[in-house]
Amino acid sequence: MLPLLGLIAGIVLGLLLKIPVPSTIVKYLGISVLAALDSSIGGLRASLEHKFNDKLFITGFFGNTLMAAFIVFMGDRLGIDLYLAAVVAFGVRLFQNLALVRRFYFQQRRWE
Amino acid sequence: MKEVLEIIDRQARRTRISIAIICFLLGFLLVTQIKGQMAAAKPLQEESEKNLVELARGLRDEVTIQKAESATLNLQLYKVERVANDKKSVIEEVKKTRDRFVISTGVVGVEGRGVRITINDDRGRLNGIDLFDVLTELRAAGAEAIAVEGQRVNVATSFSRRDNMMFMGDRRIEVPYIIEAIGDPETIYQALTMVGGIRDTLTSSVPGVSFEIATTAMISLPGGETPKYEFARAVTE
Image 1: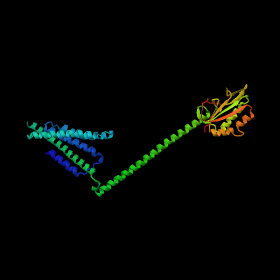
Image 2 (image 1 turned 45 degrees about the horizontal axis):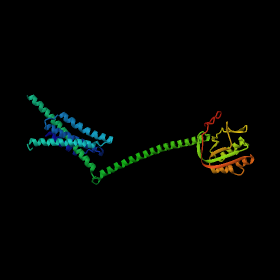
Image 3 (image 1 turned 180 degrees about the vertical axis):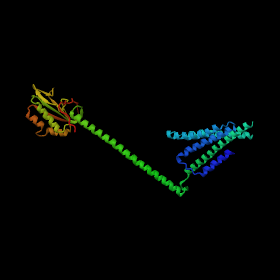
Image 4 (image 1 turned 180 degrees about the horizontal axis):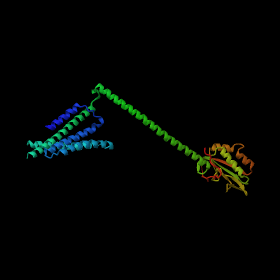
């Protein structure tokens, strides 16, 4: 319940605050959001598998988010489009974790 | 047992709080990113007048900055080009001067259009002064480089007759004397063959002398020795 409330509070605050996002950093913020989503779904999967570790989850969330933006930024400076590599890497993991979460719920409800 | 349960409960609560914070951040990030993306993709027509004015002002400032930068860069380019051109022209001038000097001193081989003069002196009546007169006439007619018997003429060149033999410096030269000169062939030809000119003078005043002159499209003259300057010193300003 508490995490859901946190999510809703975040969304509401984001809607209320008019934080200008310069077009130059939209790209980096986008990849950070993807990394954050990946970490969150990964955390959900770990908790369902009873392997959840809060320290690992928090460090993973911040680490992945910041590193994703930094890697894309470095890619831009080096002239290599690492954005695509990051999107593919996080995207694949995200879908894998989502599939496992879905499977877990299916097994729990004996639909499978 | 109660304590253990309490610890577990506390840990679980801490985990839930940390997950809630992360979820809060996730929601906030998601919304911010979506709003940023929407703002970037929003067509200009949908913007309010105030935003459009702001946008236009921003663009105008950007244009001003870019223009200023362009002007600075153009100025820099102009300066660099001018320096490069100056350097180039100085090098060209130095090269030209050097060429002039080395040609005039007669130390390097030269080639070009010119004339070939053949002077025959069957009776051995010509003396050094006569040959020198020919050289003087050639120089006056604009000859840029001269060689006698394949030997370059320079400031130290002298002719003399000793024991009925002609010498150019210390080297003996024999008839027919071949004098080659690089310069405008027509001008030199006219200057030497004009009435009362050097050809007339030599052939009429010295018996047994024949003077033939032919223009040529290409003559190669060898380089000579560097003249020795023992007493003369260059005057520097």
